[in-house]
Image (cartoon, rainbow, N blue to C red; front, side, top):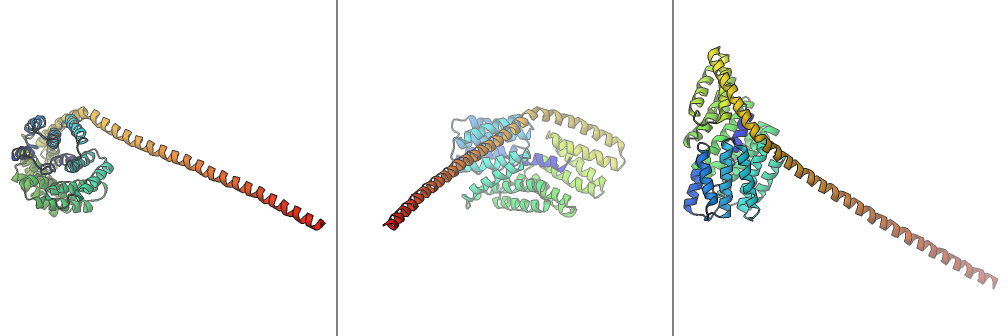
Length: 386
């Protein structure tokens, strides 16, 4: 699997991670439910969906809690690769947000919007959301409960800058993200740490610094192990295998990939499986094991078909999303164009009025001057006759 494929998956894992501590004044029981949901979003999305639904429909839930529950459900569907339902719940959350002036909510949803635009590769809009979110975070400068969101924002920027700029810049943002996560000092940040270290590892692969790549993948494995996040650990192991493959140690790469395949067999992640299968096939080909090559190549092709089928189901929603976005942009441009044309017309008439007034005054002054000259001449003529 390509690094780009992982980044698309990994960014979705940040979508909920900034929400848990962003809301105050709720019961310890509710906090506990959200915390439990958060820790299970990767491995038990169905459980998270049911829990989120019960929190959303609870008469005791505040508007903030309802929005957080909807984001929870949206993220769970994303982890299941059901983008249609994920989008559906995210839109409902955005509609509810319009009824609130809660800055905390606005921070979280802006951060989430940045994630969504990053997924769609609409990087300018993602940066715009991050900038707006960071402005609001300045109002919460001393509030450490937002360090998780700050860390997530840094991580998302790192992923964007890796695509648009270079890995040296991206690594700086990944380091800032890790610093914020560590300041939080809770298990809830460990998935974030694993994801960020994985992305740093990918950057070091691109820079061909394989020693640092291995260090970061090892850290990714460590933090995934702490929270038993099997899918994250499998991705990190796959990253290690890529290093070994690049170094020509194909047998070691195979061993690591087989471990990743074993721990992720019940996860059901098609993208993860695709990466493991294609890399196993390629490494078995390198060592001349054609039987295993054929086996994993066939698994890869079968898995690829499942992914394409899933992608086709969500294509309509993606097109609708892009169409709406482009329509909004076009409408905004049209409004700006009309305003500019209107201002130019007003300016034209204003300047024309000034010119007309000036010419009128000039003509009147000229006529007055002529009359005065005639009067003086007449006076002089009379004086000369006398």
